[in-house]
Image 1 (cartoon, helix red, strand yellow):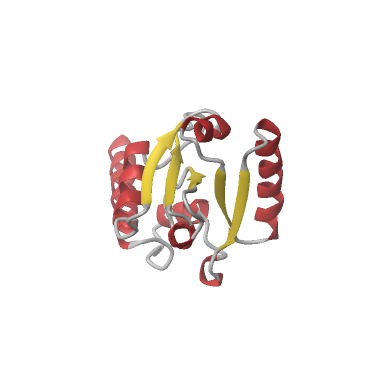
Image 2: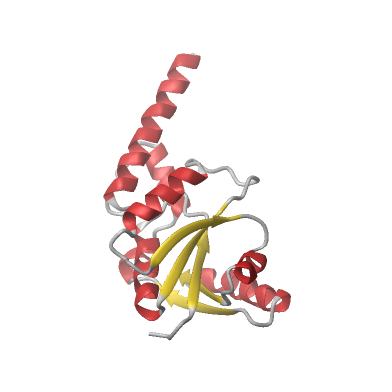
Length: 171
């Protein structure tokens, strides 16, 4: 474990997946404290509001004593500076993830030379899982139980039921 270093795992996590949980669990073994920093990105269309995403991530990480869930808006480098952290955790599933994350890492370092990005490969069981795929499967009535923690699956089912009720009443 790296002594005294605070690591940040940022993302929108809409919804949190088993792949996200895998990355944060493994990061929690490497660093004394990990903050899951959930973005307040108003320009992005989320299925879960920020408070629900925070609540879900708190539930799925409740057994990880050195993990905290927070939110931020604006530039990630500014948030890191504010909390005095310069270590980013990013999960990789495939080569295509690396290309994007590599560019982001270089941009973050250009904005702040102190920032280091640590890439963790997700467990092979989760390499094909993405939040957008999980959202689409759920919206089309598919089973997402293998892709997300139980509490997330329940919330996705509620969301789909509420959405179908709203569309039914509009007809």
